[in-house]
Amino acid sequence: MIMIKGAVGKKKYKEPFSKGIMARSLYITDLGYDKSYEIATCIENKLLEENISEISIEDLAIFVTNYLKNYVDPVLAEKYIKWRNVRKSKEPLIILIGGASGVGTSSMAFELASRLGLKNLISTDMIREVMRKIVSQELSPVIHKSSFNAYESIRTPLLGPDPVVEGFISHVDVVNVGVEAVIERALKEGISIIIEGVHIVPGFIKEDLIRKSNVILFTLIVRDENTHKSRFYSRCRQPWVKRSLDNYLSNFHLIRKTQSFMIDQAIKHNSKIIDNVDVTYTIDIMVNDIIEKYGGSYDVKQESKRNNDN
Ligand SMILES: Nc1ncnc2c1ncn2[C@@H]1O[C@H](COP(=O)(O)OP(=O)(O)O)[C@@H](O)[C@H]1O
Ligand SMILES: O=C(O)[C@@H](COP(=O)(O)O)OP(=O)(O)O
Image (tube, rainbow, N blue to C red):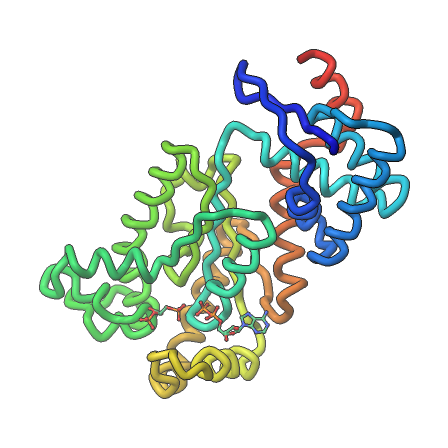
């Protein structure tokens, strides 16, 4: 059996090498579960071949990086080490995924959480639902509507040419208070989290939060109208889904307007836009962006030095 040595603060511990845990950490490199497990098995065999029965967690990371570089693919080695840097960061990762109704924010958030092994995921629809219990319809009628038809509840005189966009802005502005509270709590507690939904819009979240280096925002869109429309069919297909397909189809032109507004906002605030046509493409872009932004440099020697210093 191979034992892994680690430390939490000054407290040292040992645990047996687990192919499952190793496979999980390789999964980030987009190898897929089966391939990750296969490589984890090869790494275990290589350790045994080299008569290594005990290894520190840092040396194991170097061993894995070298294995990937020499026997699998140097690009994957780089991804692996960069993701390790992200995970070792002292700050939690706050991933915000916005997009108009139906573009796939909840599905992509779930996929991303699974790829990154993140356990916390919340939808802004749920935040809004809690707020609806606290804030009466009389006080804020807009949040008791959907984002795309909130304009029907605007009480104040219209300021611009497009009531739909104005309703959307008022709606997002209120729910954004709850979104910011979740971000602040996650930062305070050191919890990595993904927050997804129509209420994540560039330009609405407080500057001091969005500017933080560990907060990242993606705006998902579906540029092609027909593809976007077909998403509502696939979403409402399952028998347990209670949302009415007709509601989204008859309001589709309004939903498209909210998407156009979100695109304008993302461009204005220099924020990432992803055309969510293909799951693999979307997840790869998000993962690559995250590791490029927070993964630091790819330096095995650095890891080695850190290890020797300990
Ligand atoms: N990249 C994609 N390719 C194909 N189907 C997708 C993609 N992203 C999402 N979907 C599907 O589109 C539908 C709407 O996605 P969903 O995540 O519910 O949207 P949202 O949360 O943005 O309203 C779901 O049936 C989902 O499985
Ligand atoms: O307000 C909105 O636009 C949608 C967003 O939810 P998703 O369609 O993005 O899940 O919520 P609804 O009022 O339809 O429950």
